[in-house]
Image (cartoon, rainbow, N blue to C red; front, side, top):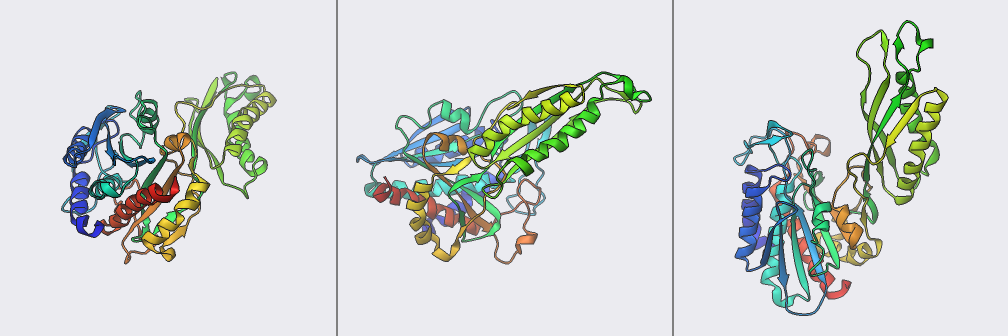
Length: 405
């Protein structure tokens, strides 16, 4: 059935790619998806978390509720691929007009889920329970001053009525061969915890530093000191962790030591113990260094948002691994290392067991070293990778309904 509808899946992908929309602005995308789902005869809800679309397939028989999720938003990136279905769309991002592109494959995610919805609807008689198709806005992050994405969908009850028992999600991968799927149990993508440190000192002439309490020198020591949390306090043989300072602001002249310096950074962790440790250690380290320099420090952690760990339930992974093997062949199911990127699919997994898998989108004749990166103008994944995703979403649902509950 996946082979039969593959031309349609490709057609849907091309349309969605050609007309991308930014986070919390997926109005036409949502309309396109909702119209398709209504055409399948499904119960469709719109306007969830602003532009989200949810459809329910009820088999009429008792059984679990399986949720399948795809994200919908594009990115403020100018497409440089020479494709007949290239995006030339424009949008507004934080007050500026910007080009818009599906530079992370969300167009393929929607098309794959639409394909799974079409097959599962046709196989309604073989189902037990219900399937909830979740098309989520704003995975890439809501515009400044707004909320969005999976966190808002959960707060608005997307996992309720009917109560979801398990959730599956896929992400296309530009550096994984078409036909392959990557998986792991436990922490698979990192928690995200942005933070801000404001170091306050005493201003003085740069020629007379002994009259100052220098926040710049203090900030330099804080930046280096924070790295020792990862290198000397965490058990890195278990999981990786990252503390990165991405922004420094302080001072305005070469010969003035300023009153204060602001640091903004991000924390990435793959297990809760490391996350908890850094939450304790970062303020301790900052305060200790600031005290030693006679400065004061204020720490805001988390800063304005945070994501949990994208955590693949180990028991669920064990149950569904035979489905992966059956769908793609055992040799094409690749056990993967965790990555320190993040996904707000984690908000669903906080509430119900879930699996998040990577599906290959790299053409076989392109070396991995030459595959364009996600979030770049050259990003490209091949249409031929989507059939694997359609099969996986369908088989995971059917198999869980039969033996996974």
